[in-house]
Length: 461
Ligand SMILES: *Cc1c(COP(=O)(O)O)cnc(C)c1O
Image (tube, rainbow, N blue to C red; front, side):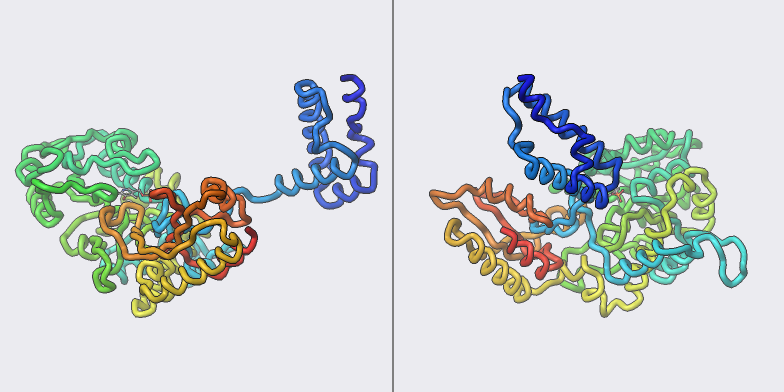
């Protein structure tokens, strides 16, 4: 074994060789030395265990190839772009909405230099970072003002902490939801220091339930969009309109966590309808919170719109400072919102809406191109077909609704392994993510934003 250890090159020797010097020129001295030590240590452990020199250090060329590949890997950003063929358009695990061109450009210029973030160019004095977005949202929704934070979970926390800390919040048992990533309404309430007062039952809540729960400690009446689940059958819930009337009578503000928060009526495109922010404002809700990267099709943010006096209190709360957005997010969000000023062009300009409104002809074209390319690459190893599929919006929008779609399906033949192929898809420079169902790999093309790039990646197979 000693003989084997002696075959391992010394770090000093490696870095003085021409190939070593080349690596240092590319990756830097510290990184190369650290990587040499790491690889040699692993080799020593491997020798101890297997009593032979590991394959990756067999010969000096192999050794340098190993070092180069590990150093390259170390410098590669691991948050990889992937191709979403899951059929879920707003997929939280895959980063939700794709940014529009306009948002990308705005974000890029914001990153590249200083911006007048909290500086009023006209007055030449300190301004407010949500100012432009607030004005835009007022124009788009009719709200008096807006406040922007990191995501909708933060928005809910901020609303509760600002108006209901140490006080009671009345909410229906049917709306005590958990959505992915450990967002649970009761937990957020606890974090905000509020007392949750549950009313009604899981399936039915009436106005009188809210009325009976109101006392001098009640700070808010709250509605939460049920998002990723639906209660069917013998159900009843109280509309915002009714709740607002009660709130006015008892002098308690009403807030709504709208979740996705559409700014346009999706029914005009023949899509399943989601309540819009405008609709809820028109019903008199005092504050509405929603996400920036769900149906809005923008960037990760939480937006709160409503009455000026309430928004001013949110802006003044210390938590707002903790939860505020950076210049890049605000630039991307502002650019996204400006697209809504030209609603006729939205299906073209906003990737989320484009994906949702693609015609079956477009989907057929994409599916056909993908099928041809896969057949070329996989020869006849697999059975490849185009089949009707059911896509979905995702991120808690209309969880039961399905959008007609097409998928390229791949089934294994006697000598091929589908699991191996799915694994291979994941190792591509931009991994392809589909879904397994009924023993086939389904590649739903409705969630594909960039077919050309996808086809190029298929060529790596
Ligand atoms: C998605 C969602 C949230 C959380 O929003 P994020 O932007 O992911 O923080 C909160 N409430 C509801 C009802 C939702 O649908």
